[in-house]
Structure formats: C-alpha cells, structure tokens
Image 1 (cartoon, one colour):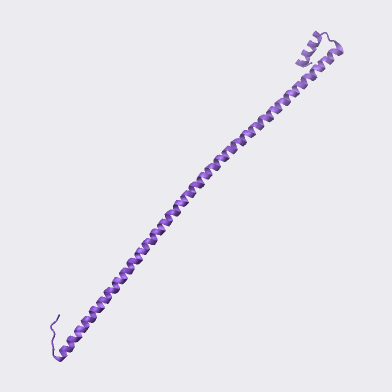
Image 2 (tube, one colour):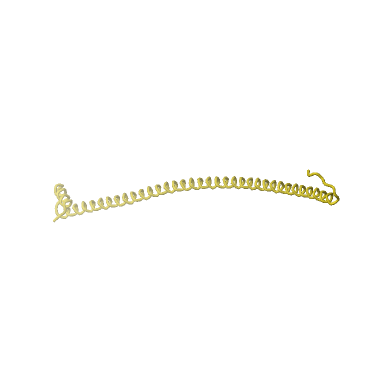
Amino acid sequence: MLSTSAQQSKEVGASMGLKGTDLLNFVREQQKLEREDQDKKRERQREEKKQEKQRKREKRALEEERKEKERAFVREKIREKDQAITSQKKTKDRQRQHELEKAKQAFEQELERFKQASKQRQEEERERYRSDLKKHMRQMQAHGRGHVFPPS
C-alpha cells in the first residue's frame, strides 16, 4: 500500500498522462523531493532549536552577569559601610583615649596638689610642734629657776 503522499503523486502523474515506468520515476522523484524538503525542514528545526538554546544560554549568561554585578555592588556598599563604621569606631576610641588621658592628667595633678597640701600641713604641724616644744622648754627652764611665765 502506498503512503498518502505517494498516492497523491501517482494521481498527479496519472492526470498528467504518465504511465508505467514514467509514472514510477515521477512518483520516486516526487518522494525524493519530499524527503529533501522534510530533511531541510528537520535541519531548519534543529538549527532553530540550536539557536534558541544559544539565545537562552546568552540570556542566562547576561542575567548571571547582571546578578554578579549587583552582588558586587552590594558587597562594595557593605565594605564601604564597614569601613565607615571602623573609622567611626577608631575616632571614638581616639576620643575616649584622649578623654582618659585628660582625666588621668587631672587626677595626677589633683594628687600632686593633695601631696603638696599634705606636706605643707605636716611642715606647719612640725613647726607648731617645735614652737610649742621650745615654748614648753623655756617654761620648764624658767620654772626650774623660779620664773613662771603666764600661759599664752
């Protein structure tokens, strides 16, 4: 049994008045042309699929490149923000260190003033003690000689 296209080719050839070997050659020639057309059509379809796959790969590559650029941008922003935070922390640390140095210096100055005041009080007390001792000694000497000084 002949295929539909072979049957149609036979009918076309018969209507053209072809018979026998000429009709057979005509049908074979038509089938050959149809196969070539089908082969070309399949080849075009394969090529279109190949091109479509290539377009999809290129689109994915572009999308991936865009995403990578976006990620790089975000990483850069994060890095800049981290640098800013680090810089702020360093500035605050320097300020705290400066304040600590000022407080330490003020404490040392206050301690030095306290030491000086304490030393001065001790000197004054020693001087008062010496003065009282001298006075008391004079009184004792005078008392031993019979002189009595009124208390001052």
